[in-house]
Length: 264
Length: 257
Ligand SMILES: Nc1ncnc2c1ncn2[C@@H]1O[C@H](COP(=O)(O)OP(=O)(O)OP(=O)(O)O)[C@@H](O)[C@H]1O
Ligand SMILES: [Mg+2]
Image 1 (cartoon, rainbow over the protein chains, first blue to last red):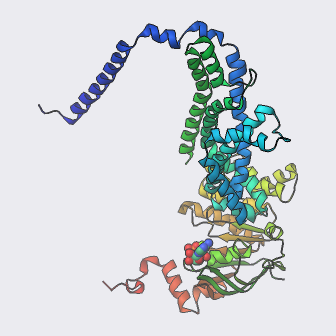
Image 2 (image 1 turned 45 degrees about the vertical axis):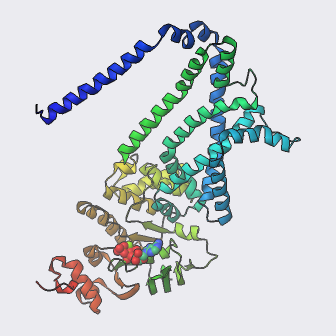
Image 3 (image 1 turned 90 degrees about the vertical axis):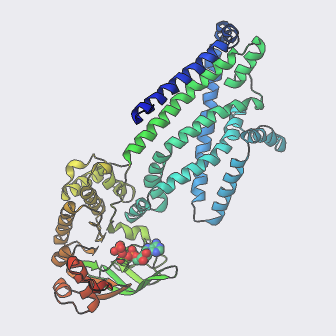
């Protein structure tokens, strides 16, 4: 039988839907729904986690993320400017820093800041307790990534912008602050938002610093509940709470990218 | 005192020598148009005047200040020199009004009210007072270039540099920019203009400078340079520019058909 091209495409498409539907049916039939919901969706276990899941764990996760982000962004901006500096040692330092911290696992850096530094300098301590250690420990790594993002953003601003500003009598630093950086930031908002999403997930490493019931974040909180209740429902609850943070952010990135594509 | 005095100017990019000994003076109130083939160094010459390019050798004085002196405060000199680029270079993140006020505020330290008043005046001068709240991306090329001119004028420059201000424009938008420039010339602004608009140069210029290969080949009043050029190279260039459809195959080295 000879099918027209349009007919053939339609048959293929229908076949695709049928295969997908059958696969779902097979999974549904094979699953033991009673066991599943007992394990992952026990409402009494879920209910026992609130309100601390939000007032403490979610709150700390967001707080750690923001602290590390602000620290990382500030340091990242300094590194990006050093990387673009005309002074050679600045460029060397920035390049070495970025290569080093992009190459190290975030967990290792966190251990270093949380335990290595206090052991090396027993008479000094990072202010802010665990909040300070997290800010620095996660921020140092984030700064390396954000420095590269910001450098790319600064370089994406056309050279004519700086020239026009200098021509109007602005000094180089003034032209950077008033003209180049505002436009560079606009360009890098989507990748920086991605960076926040990654940081949000990296806060799950914080437990290695030894958190208390007031400084606990989502993953450790869920892990503790898993141990006491001997039931994995808390993991599902924590997962959903992470999505509460990250899904709107990825939505935001998508919207911004769509808008940027239109403006171009 | 001349507004611009250039003596023995050389500029190389690596091994490429782009300017090979330029001497040029521009007197107050003069409109000097620089013409010449692509790559002859016209933009480089203009960009040396406000030190966007660092000369390799020679001296440049602007209103008596030697800008090539390493101790010269170049930001202060640039305040007095307006520059208009081929690509407009408006600040994309700022409105038209902010484009015109930002340097007044940050560089000249004018108050917000005064800067805004002067911006409004200059936008009216280029016929764009009603576009003050628009963003550059919302304007046509001709409008953007007029805003760029207003932005430069708001700094009260004693000299304006134009680098092919109409070359990036659609043909029907060229006229509005040239009209603004003609108005400036009539008001007595000192102007150094690189342009391919021969009709504009013929009508507005007090002097026309023809450059080729990094040197000034010929200069003089427009009537002389256009009507009775002394140099063969000038004649050839003008023939190609003014009568592009009459350039014969032999002139470009192709066999006659
Ligand atoms: N920053 C630079 N680095 C290296 N070479 C350059 C640079 N700027 C200009 N040049 C070269 O110098 C020569 C003269 O350039 P310039 O822009 O001054 O010419 P022009 O007369 O303005 O030409 P056009 O009419 O095309 O604008 C060209 O060969 C160009 O490639
Ligand atoms: Mg040019």
